[in-house]
Length: 353
Image (spheres, one colour):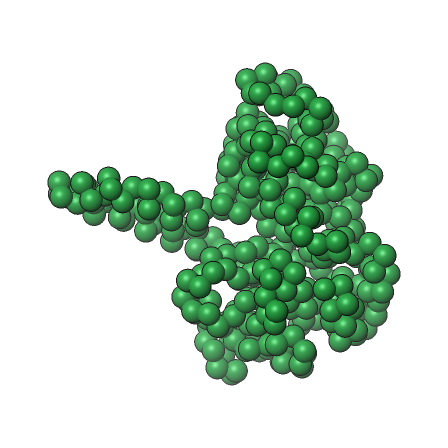
């Protein structure tokens, strides 16, 4: 499997990102990497590492779409930007998927421009797995589509259910709608429309509204659906809360000698919890509904995040002959969605599973 990694984007150094990519090779013998970025910087980072040269290729570019740059402007004026080259490698069949920890909007735009949507998919959502007390669940959209229609939400639900069935190994995934209350009448005007649309999809096992606290502390739902605006807020709130809790614990522990001794003994536990809640623990969110693999990282993704992103990409590719981003021949059946034929999509996806 060939994977293109944009090591020029994001907030971390090229050296750190390259180091993480190389670490993934020691954990998986079936992956080859194409590192995209400034060749001199990549070679400088590689010179400090031991690796199999036959498993690494480099695609040089000096252009980068910065974190604060307009995605539309960047895609238009920087045709050789690292994220565009990485996506183009997938489009040209030189890579099976690409990953970028840079400007999220630019990554999404690059994926849509270079790879394209599967026929019938209205809007590709970002999906990620998140921890809960009894295991994990998946949530979408995590930020790709801040404004959604009821039909977009319905498609997310169908794709999310198949994702959970295929990759979380859940026989009959329960689908819930993110809301401020579990009652059917709760929510703003848009959320109520989303609820009504999902309620009509009888075969997706829709269990109704789910509150953010319940999706984490209970076992009520396996797939949480939201528009990209609210989904991204939830994700970043979880990341911030995890960091806050670790810092509060450290502050309390330092207040007296006995606590300090106990804290030293609990340090491995604290580190484990912090790692589980860190965005680097997953490495990437997946952009579903494309003609190829597109994985989006956090701007602060470090070496460990890149390593996990590569492993995550490989596992998705390995565990399914027909994933949600490689429908191959079956993609020709994904028709009439714009006309509202969501039951047709559901039946097709069931065949793929």
